[in-house]
Image 1: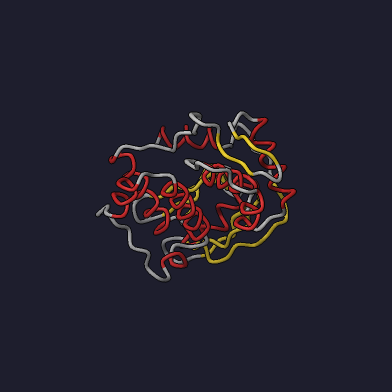
Image 2: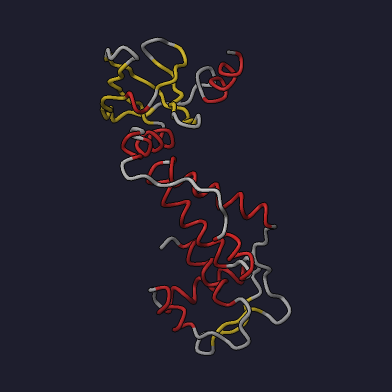
Amino acid sequence: MRRADRLFLIIHALRGRRAALPARSLAETLGVSLRTIYRDVADLQVSGVPIEGEAGVGYMLRKGADIPPLMFNAAELEALVVGTRFVRAFGGERLGVAARAALLKIEAVLPPELRERSRRTRIFAPVIPGRHAARGPIDRLHAAIESRTLLLLDYRDVDGRITAREVEPLCLAFWGGVWTLGAWCRLRTDFRDFRPDRIAAIHDTGRSFDEDPARGLDAYLRAADSC
């Protein structure tokens, strides 16, 4: 578990309690040591979270100083739920898992009526087995964008011909049925859009690139707007 997630869960566990929660109980629930809980609580206190208590006694939020939960109106909540469903269906496995985890955290702090409302939303984006594979290597391209990794692609054009393209990946865009990879193509010395489902192979170059302002994301977006 990431430390940020653990700190969130500690605050959530203390919210609304009338009696101190023993550190040992927190440690057992989160699967960490007592020392870790003591350190996390101390860090939360230093950052301004109104936690009272001490080791051997337990912890609780200061009376009258409870941290308000995340609050959304019905329309905002529906937008979050629907957005999560679309990411799970179309965003690749990596983002799909993250979207589901994010929604679980939000629902954990919602009042019961809004939590139930989130489950009744009638806009769906069904997760179809094999859909991720059919849309190409979204997760791998996403990782290359984040790490600025130079990619060598075997790319198939509309007529089925394959060419080798060395590209600097800049962004991914979803067009309601088709993904495109926005990139600087070193072969064409210009910006190009590549469909992930037409990438026959990705070869690891082991090299990274520096994003040059003349051929980076901002320049790509300006060029796209001018088309």
